[in-house]
Image (cartoon, rainbow, N blue to C red):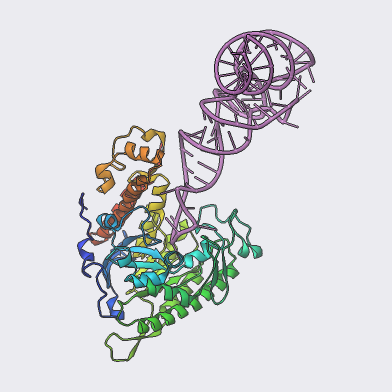
Length: 455
RNA sequence: GGCAGAUUACCCGAGUGGCCAAAGGGGGCUGACUGUAAAUCAGCUGGCAUUGCCUUCACUGGUUCGAAUCCAGUAUCUGCCA
């Protein structure tokens, strides 16, 4: 990273020539994943972790990679130029939010998500599956060490978090959403979600899934998982149909999403089911023939306890095809990143860097701290000593502390740039450590310092 | 000069005999945040110690078993009348 970086994307992302007209080719072959180095454990045995390169119509992604979240076609408070300058390789938006806001058709008309938001590099869209949970039960996705606190058993499947209203209701065919913006009812089905995502035009899309919580019973987890399996097939079929119908557009990859909560048998079954799914795709040569095509990659999502994260990712890595990328949805804490990469996750997205930035917290090698604290009032150092981000190059803790106290919006921008850079750089360092064989040294050093007990 | 009304913790403000260390805001302090219903939420905010004790509702003095609350005086402020 350099300071005063011009408003252009990194070299590896400029192959498409910016947000110009779409390339003519439209084939599943426009999306590839090549495994690079494999991680070896301290015992000399191979691990699931690896480096790789994802190639999309809008550029490549070196993995492992952190993909910053731009839910509504915007990384909150940060310009895309700044995201490129801090090393972001791709951005992830949300189909549900974009469908409610500008409307997916508008983005199609505008030339797709990337062009609409002035991000020439690769893009992802989430399916709206997360909103099945967040607008449904409202419970947190990752439960703390104390485990579920809501009533368990029969009634738990209808439980709603305290103070929340149920705004999503699931049935076999799909989900009714009640808009959190104006109360309008909206219908999402696998076909609707994939249709919206095709209109949004991201390089990588996710299948529409049902995210359960740890409050749900085992019986409900099985029921939901089966439903998600059936939805996955419908997503793949609709994806094949639309890929054919929208020939001439850049190919959009579709990732299936693995659920199954903390249950090993359910996770393994989900992986096997989705890995084996096929649908007929048109080939890219214009010959009119079709080819059998499965998911281009896989998302690992759902309810899990932090302590089981690595184990669950490991189960998935064992069951899923080696030659397809594995995206871990919604994770970015440093310990979780190391654990997940070690066990086979290739890419990550998470709202945490910008969310905690907006609420005053910043990451450092020594842990996360709250900048509104009175102790920073006269601290004229950078947010993090030695950080190479734009914020740390130009601004002090005291100044940003002042901006937060004065409720100046640019505080969110400066904080978010730092936190995004911190997370992107951490995953970049993890990638480099796999290449040069120092993963475990890096893990011990980084986590030992980040989570060291404080006074 | 006369009449009427005010004065509550850092600020604004509720409280008109005991359930009041005193509602509610703001501010301050601390913490949380993992596919964004999140520029949000939670706790604390007179002092000291473990339940508990001590000092507070402009000031002084009363009434009462008991006063932020009732009475008298004083100070300051705000209206209206000269």
